[in-house]
Length: 76
Image (cartoon, rainbow, N blue to C red):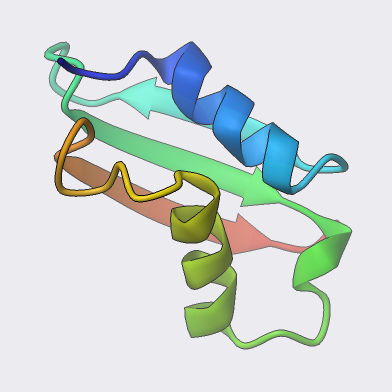
């Protein structure tokens, strides 16, 4: 079952409470999303680790309920 943009945003906000999160459904199918996450938690952390933090927030749903997620991260 596909995930909604609101569900993705909720998981990320739970893991990164200060985050500004924008999620866009790229194909309108609930399987292909792009998200932008801005959080102070990313300060001093490598880009790879920042993306891992976002994927970890999804609690194993990548590749299952969520097929594709393009991630853009930054600090405030």
